[in-house]
Image (cartoon, rainbow, N blue to C red; front, side, top):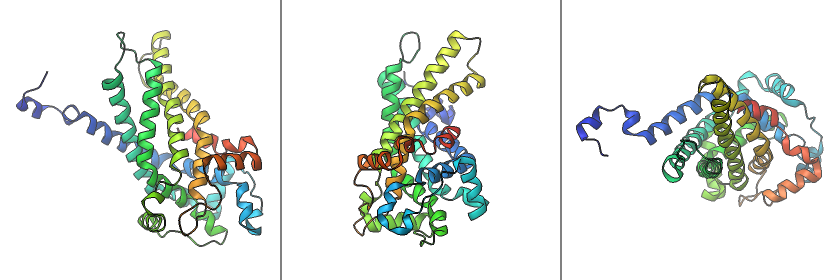
Length: 300
C-alpha cells in the first residue's frame, strides 16, 4: 500500500529511507565501536605477525625469533616502545573500513532477511536462512571494504618496522592508498581478498546466526525479555563462535596483506592463502592459526 506524497514527507527519515538510515546508523555505531576497541585490533594484528616462519627466507635478520608475549604484554610493549597513542595507529582506514563493511553488511542482511527469504509464520527466522544471509552479507560487505582493510593492516605494522630499523612505507592514509594503487594497480587494492571474504563469511555465519538463535532461545525458554541483558548474553555467545570460526582466516589474511611485494605487486612470501596456511602450520604449528584469538573475541 502506497503512502500519499504529502503524508510521506511528514514521516521520520528512518521510515522514509529505511535502508539508507540503517546504513548510516550502522556506520556511526561502527565508528564509535572502532575508536573504543581499536587497541585490541592493533594488538591482535601484532600477535598474528609474531613468529612468522616464512620471514626466514628473507635473510639473517628475519630469522631472529620474536617471543609470543600474549595480549597484555604485547599492548604494554607497544606503549613502552612506541608510545600510548600508537595503540590507535591505523585507526583512520579502520573507520573507513567499518563504515563500508558494517553498513553494507547490515543493509544486505536486513534485505535478505525481510525481502528475499522472509520470516516463518510464527515470526521466527529459521537457522538455515540466517546462515545463508550471514554468509552473503559478510562476503559482499568485506569485498567492498577490502582496500581499506589492506591499508589498515599495513599501517598497523609501521611501528614495528620502525623499531626494526626498516623504512616506513607510508606518510599517511591517502599516501598509502595512492602508493598501493601506483605499484599494484586497482588489483593491488584487493590483495588478500580471498581469505578476507572467507573470514567475513565465517565470522558473519557465527556472529549473526548464533546471535539470532541464542536470543530467540532466551526469550522463549527463560524469564528474560528482549532487553539489554538478552542482547548482551547473545553477543557474548555469538562473538565466541565467530572468533573460533574466523581467527584462522584472519591470521592468513593479515599475513598476506602485510607481506613484502616485488615491483609488480606480487607477494614474496606466499603464493596464495593455501600456501600461507601450509607454511604457518608446518613452521609454527596448528595453534599459530589462533594467534590473536583473545583480543579478537574481546573486541567482538
